[in-house]
Amino acid sequence: MNSTNTNSVREVVATTPGVPATDGDGVRMTRVIGSQELNMLDPFLLLDAFESDQPQDYIGGFPSHPHRGFETVTYLLAGRMRHKDNAGNEGVIEPGGVQWMTAGKGIVHSEMPEQENGLLMGFQLWVNLPARAKMSEPGYQEYPPSQTPLEKREDGTEIRVIAGITSEGTEGIVRNEHVRPTYLDVTLPAGRVFEQRVDAADNAFIFVIEGELDAGERRTAIGRRNLGILSEGDLVHVTTAQGARFLLVSAMPLGEPVARGGPFVMNTKEEIIQAFDDYRHNRF
Ligand code: FE
View (cartoon, protein in one colour):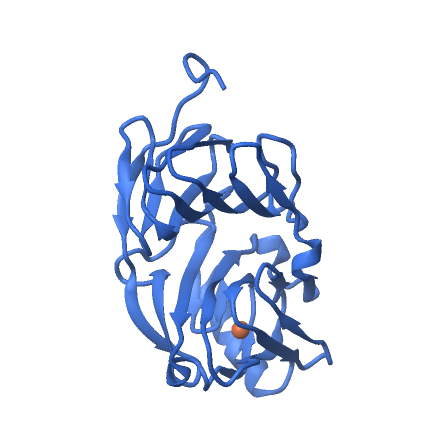
C-alpha cells in the first residue's frame, strides 16, 4: 500500500497498562479503559482484560446484575463463559466467539465461568449508545468461533474479524450503525507489516495481547498487555520484530454528555437516578 500522500498514519499518543481491578464476585482483571488513568475513549466506556489460570481469580464470576444505555462486547481467547438473562436468553461464549450485547433500556444477566480450572483469558468492552438508542429494545449479536470470519494472509498474518472490514475485504459479522466499529484480533508474525484503513474521525486503540509491536511512522513501541491510544488519521501501521498478537479497535465518537452510575450509562444524572429506580422496582 502506498502511504505517501493522501494517507495520514496514526501515531501512538499515549500508552497505558491499565490498573488492577476487581469486579463481579471477586473477579480479578486489568481495567484498561474506565479507570482514573483513562476514563473513556469515546464511544468506549470500559475495557477489562482478563487473564488468569488461578480459579480464585475468576470462579466467582459476575452474578446477576443490570445494564442500561450501552453495549457490552465479550470476546474470549481462552476459557468459556456462560450468560443468562432475565428474558430467558442463555448461551456459552467460547474462544474466538463473540457476544455483542445491546443492553438498551435494560437487561439483567449473569456471566459465569463455564470451568473450574484452567486459563480464562479475554476482554469485555463497553461501547456507548447514542441518546436516541439508549432506551431501545435489548438484543444480542452472538456468534461462535465457526461464524466469526478468520482471514489468513499469505505472509502468515491471521485476523479474526469481529467488526469492520479488513484491507483485504474480509467483513466482520457484527453490525452497529451507531458508531460503525472495527474490532480485529490480529496475529502478526515476526518481521511483518500490518496496515489497516480506519475512518479518520474514529477513535482507535491497540491492545497488545502477546509479544510487542511498533505503531505509526514514529514506530512507537507498545508492550505486552498495554493499550496504545492512536492519534487521528486514516491508516494504522504496525510492525513487529518478534511477532505480536493484538486487538485493533476503532469507532466513531458520539460526542454526547456521559453520565455514569455503576452498570448504567446515560446522558444525564436524572436518567441515572431513573435507571436505579426502574431497577429497584423491577421495571427491567
Ligand atoms: Fe454484564
